Structure formats: structure tokens, C-alpha cells
Length: 116
Image (cartoon, rainbow, N blue to C red):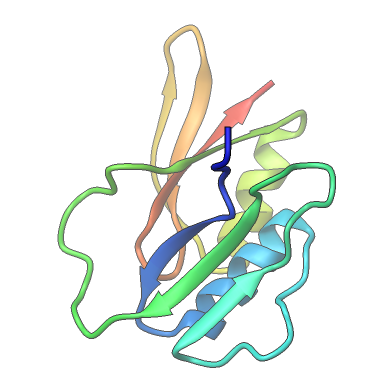
């Protein structure tokens, strides 16, 4: 096959700020040259296609994401606290066979944090 994922890219008002949040959340770095119009979070070398991009758009986010990250952790409460400390907002917490919380990054993009 001659196709592969290069990155997942999100719309943002401030691409550099969105990238900074996700770089800190995932323990990565923001690639050189980031500004408010475009920024990328460096890929995890062990995970092909794991670069995360952000591009500035003028419109606000108005509906739920059609795609989101599912993150998993062994220390659920500490990670919820750390992510909200970085600027995420906790939207919901569910314990229905799988314990997880839905959060939103500072741009309003939802993601789930799952307790392992």
C-alpha cells in the first residue's frame, strides 16, 4: 500500500497554544516554527502517524467532535487533575464497565481519559 497517516490535524483559534497544551499533556514537544496560524506536536518516534497538527480557523467550534482521542492511564485521578491544571475542562465522568472522563482541551476539542 502506498498511503499512510502523516498526522491528525485540528482546527484552532490559536494553533501554537493548542499545540502547547497537547505537547504538555502527552509529554512531547512543539515542533520548531510554531505560530498562532500553524503548529505541530512532534510525533512519537515509536508510533507512525502520531504527529498532531493545528491550523488556525476564524470560526468557533459549535458542535461535538466527530473524532477524538481516547487516552488511557494507570493514575486516573492524578491525570484528570494534571490535565485540568493545564487548561482542560472536565465535561463528564462515567463508570459503566469502563471508567472514563470526557474532557475538553482549551480550544473545546473533546477527548476521553480512560482508567486502566
